Length: 297
Ligand SMILES: [Zn+2]
Image (cartoon, rainbow, N blue to C red):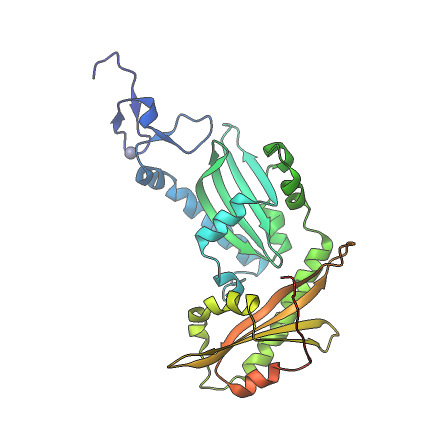
């Protein structure tokens, strides 16, 4: 290399690279280039800590530090799946810009009973580095995490029909429904704790039964419909598993929600899902009207 050769080097380890196209970029319109993925990580990891600390402090302040910690519904999704879901079809995108014109983006996707959040850098219209991914049901948490300028999702794509659908604001009704779901969950969980026998499958092992969730929803042996004490319609999905060394049932209790449009569409949302080997507990859930036919999940 000669003195007159243009100089390109890794922002992190300062390795000299032969040409510009050898540099990897994370930020739009930035001269920060890197020689490798590991240098990208080394460079940005302190910022991950920064966002983790912010999240920790905000959750403590709002009293939701343990929010969603032991949710089976949520344990179904790995961090990577969550990030992919949120980034591929966000409901909201926020762009937070500093005075150096450096951007950080917040992607939010509203799922039926919680919201996923990803804070990241964007390069070439794609997320290039994720600082934080988390889930919440808290409206205040969402309010604090929305910073900067809201991006109009219609601007991002020519074919906006799908995005229009996704852009629908998370309505007041959605929040009320989420809270209802949360209340039902605490009631059901309390009942379950009371009725559970000592030798039933332990809570610590519930994650081993995760695969049963989708199997039970998609292909239940039995579905019961009943009204709870508040008059809300619940659906109980049950599937039995008969195995050489272990027989058990997987039970999912769902709440019905009628959509407020002309479609007459009915959706059901899981409240609580668990495995049990206790026949008495299983029988206790087989109440109400046994129904057949398709239910739209
Ligand atoms: Zn490097």
